[in-house]
Length: 384
Image 1 (cartoon, helix red, strand yellow):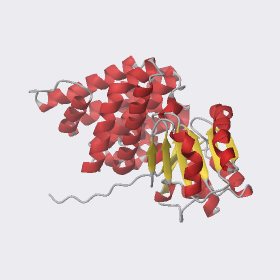
Image 2 (image 1 turned 60 degrees about the horizontal axis):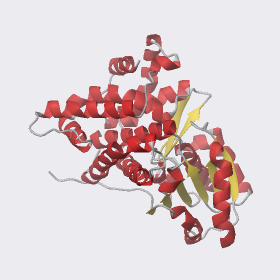
Image 3 (image 1 turned 60 degrees about the vertical axis):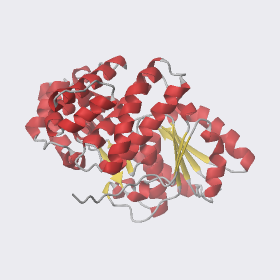
Image 4 (image 1 turned 180 degrees about the horizontal axis):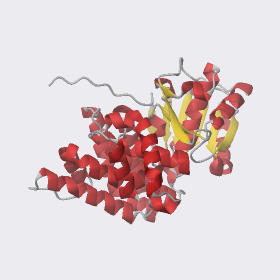
């Protein structure tokens, strides 16, 4: 059968321990002299000092926008863009987790296009390239450093919405595993399992390609082999390196094949209840895998293999179910025991949650099984 596919991502990827030390050189490659640094609020003091020590000797001045918070409200993107315009910033550097990088990418296109964040929500709404973007993750999770998406909370609508445009792809993804060494166990687990969701969803997406499947499956293997060590011995640099590489691969899989129903079902959990993205995805992962398994037996068997399960000689269905066992064990070993009930969600909330989830259409279009409202309600019930 003839196959036609494309594969895209950040324009340049630099990976390695100590890579942050070359930041000034990369800024100069982009012909930038006055970047805006966008940082997670809780990382601001530490990373401002790190950046100052690297950029000051190189004669590069920078300004800082450090109001980013988890599950960022969309207003932050407009506020940051206004600062970039005021300071005549000629590049944007995002440092932190997915929230900081998503906000940074949005700031870059809003400032350059002289627009508002809400103008760009949806697919392909950004008319022209933004300011040059450098993304520096401090978690091994979201993959935002190589994707064309930025997701925000609409507090007025109590929902999450995203910008999706090729103009959001960063010019540079700079990945330094040393920056993840200080991440505490809980966020290490939640962001790591978020990366696992990206890898599993992109691998089972009906829009996967031979290239995306390569990186997605390798991401699953790397995460399965290293996440436990990162959670329980965070100073293990070798494990942190492999985990960040797994997150990178998962991000590339996500960017090219898309995610599936896990993300559609988790969006209203973040938008309405403020549940962190990685945790919301983790809570829905087992239910969605259970639902999707009959529609992707061979791929689920591959996932089981990648996670170290012995599938030799097993029928496809039995091998596929080992993937569920492996994922459930990894979640448990990472100390994630949350359920929807822990956030005050009850059965009466399921129909409204399902209605919102079904509006998150693109991931559902990638799903290996069609999802109805009744299906969504049943998966929320399983996650209760």
